Image (cartoon, rainbow, N blue to C red; front, side):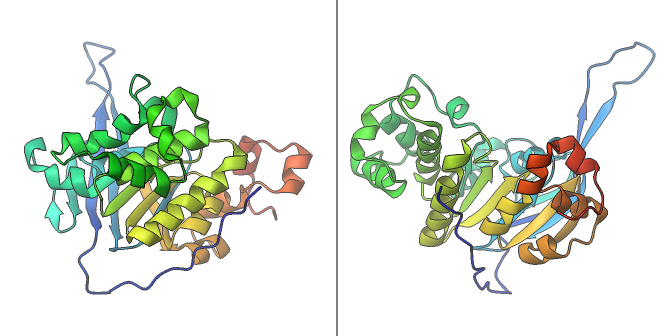
Length: 293
């Protein structure tokens, strides 16, 4: 099984405009009313999130399911809107911009989703899937560009004639990455890109993402529930819990010496061979405090 290559953080220009900046972002959802006498209950998905991602940085967001990671990504990509606060992408405040004024964002920021099978249209050939962002944004969708992208993600040119169901999970995620890179974005947002894949191919896809980010000089926002994966891929990491960022720092520092109690629990819950053989479940690991790994 291939190993995830260790990433060496690159130097960043301290005075450069941040790629992404969030200021006190709140997102509340209203649930359906269950009583005529009571107001509709609210779900507080994000509670005053502040973060800054530098140009060319690999920034990780880690936390357990339901902590608000995916909501945060959707707001960064303007697929959802904040209830309050400000979302600034490459110097432009997109918080209240109408869709017609977001074309620059659709070109410069692309997403790779968690489940490649559900994010790829099963009725379309791969070449059309990869070319779709170019067509939507009014760019020429040349066959040469599609072949270049297939080669970049390690697939043969004839893969463009096939359908998504004819590929393995890892190959489908490579197709998703090729589609995201088609319009030549500057920011790549990956939402749990390997969690739906078999363990044997996770390292391959992570190394591919890492190589492409370096080669194309992209800014990467990488979401995962696995701090050990983020440690290998990202320069800095923000730890989320219950809609809040509870700790931010360089990934190696957070991994080696977590400061917040929740981060300490996440680190202590990273599976080890000893714990796996002992039959410990995820619930057991998260409930464990201070036990040596």
